[in-house]
Length: 146
Image 1 (cartoon, one colour):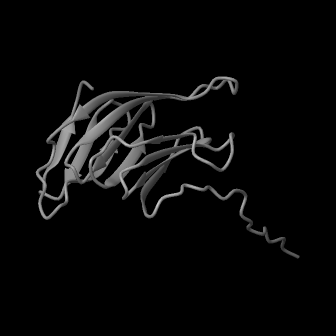
Image 2 (tube, one colour):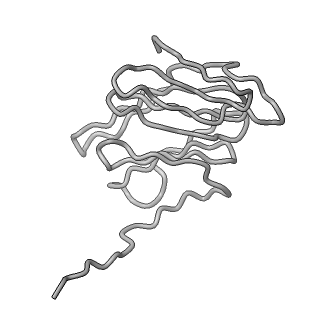
């Protein structure tokens, strides 16, 4: 007889937003960032509960992508305003310390806005603190020395 594992929902996260455009899980597995079309970047600490740990509203238009760096304590988001925002996002192994989020840099005018679409996607280099962004203008940008 073969045992079949049953799937079950462990936790339901409540973002209180209209539309979610992207999400990314921190490499530790305990944190999640969510980009929304109503300009919010939401950080969930899965150990603290089902409500957001922090909600950030720095973009002027819809956020299209948000990602953690796989190696460094960095996080970035890009939006239809053509900008990309970079944050220092430190997650501590000590559960008594709260995660730290500090805005580092705004990469303004990275992409031209065409038909109300700016920066659509971003990706971190796997080993370097380099950020790639792609936009509705058909361009890919590489940002170094963040």
